[in-house]
Length: 256
Image (cartoon, rainbow, N blue to C red; front, top):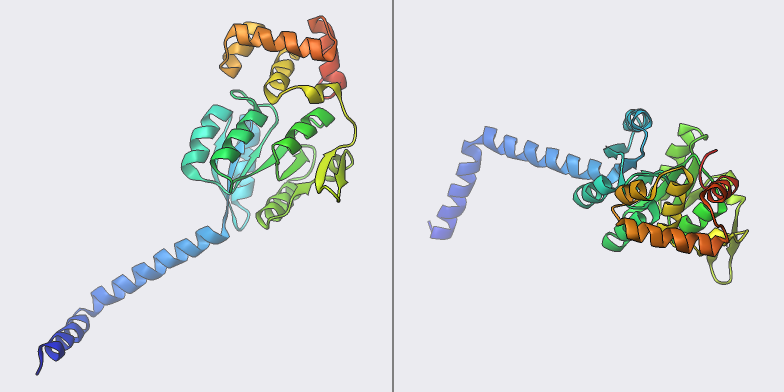
C-alpha cells in the first residue's frame, strides 16, 4: 500500500477509533455557531440615564424582550465612553441630560470613533433647541419618556432595520426638505446658535449650579465655564442668571 493510502487509512481509523471525541468536537462547533448566529440576530443595547431606578426598570424590561440584550446600563457619559468602546453595542439609548461630557458632544465623539453605532434619544424634555442639536449629530431617533415602553421597543427594532424613528410629538416640530434631503426644526431659536457645550453649560446654570459646580460636572476649568457663560448671555441678549433660568424654562431646555 502506498504512503498516501496508508496515511488516509490511518486518518479514517483515527476518527473511527474516537467517536466520543469526534461527537464532542462537532457539538462544540454547533454551539459556537449557534451563539454566533444568535449574536448577529440580537440587538445589543447600551442605556444611559442619570436615574438609576429607570435604568434598572428598562434593563429588566428590555432583556425580557426576544432579540434584545442590554449590554450595559450607565449613569454618565464618562463611563459610557469606555463601555461603548469595549462592548460595541448596536444602539445607545440615552437621555439629553447626563453628568459628564455634554450629551451631544458625546454622541459626536462616539460617532467619529464608531460609525456603526446608532443613538436614540429618550428624554423627558422636548424643545426645538435640543431637537436641532440632536439632528445635527445625526441621531437615529428621538422619543419621550412619557410614551410607552412598547413605543421604545418599536423604535429600537425600526432603527435596527436601518430606519429612523421620531415619535409624533417630535415629528410635529420637524421639517424635511426632499430636494436637499435635509431635516431641520421648523422654528429657528436664538439658542440654535449655541454650541453643544454652551447648551450644556446653559442648562446647568439655569438649574442653579454655580460656575465651580458646572466646571466639575463637565470636567472644564472655571475660567472656561465663565467664558462660555459670557458668550451664552451675549448670544441670547440675557444679562443675569434669573433671566437665563426663565429663558431655559420657556424654551423647555429644563423642566420647571
